[in-house]
Image 1: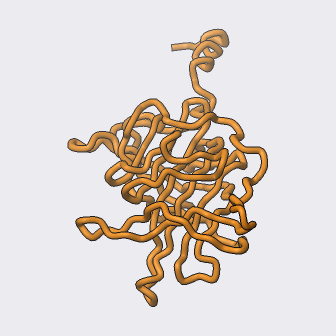
Image 2: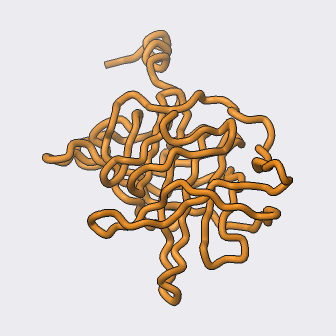
Length: 240
């Protein structure tokens, strides 16, 4: 079949910009579009309004840990992450990390994904063994994922596998919705939010308090921690 310039122009107009690269979709590797909302494990962690409130840099803490990624068909993404980092030498020094970020993404022809944040992402870190046990900091790191794959599981349905820049895998994510569950795809706060200040001038932060549920798995609940100041330390990109 010979395509005239007019036909080629019409065909090109139906190709979404974010998928303009040479992306392969097939039953073996990418059984469906990446557009939508994905979540790992019990799917308790989900992007959208139920997880983060960027206006005051707060979180609604899920019952269990996990990750959730959402992708729109016009090139926007959102990530919700909630996890613990163990310490082999100090078993009681478990670090809790909860974070949110959004921005724009590109699917590259070599199978990688590059995610560029809008600039209003943030994360909360609690380490009971650190000098500053609880703080919130901005998180706006460009992230590169080396590969991504979508498989069709006979039992659980579509499952997204993503591999970080060094090839290490993220936890598999299940398709929650074909429509992305995301906060507005624009800057949601203009300046970093200040810590809340009590009547006596002491800065107060929300804390993540460790508990054990009925089956022995650990999770973090909302509590309160009071400090006389906030030391912003350098934290490497924390990816689940």
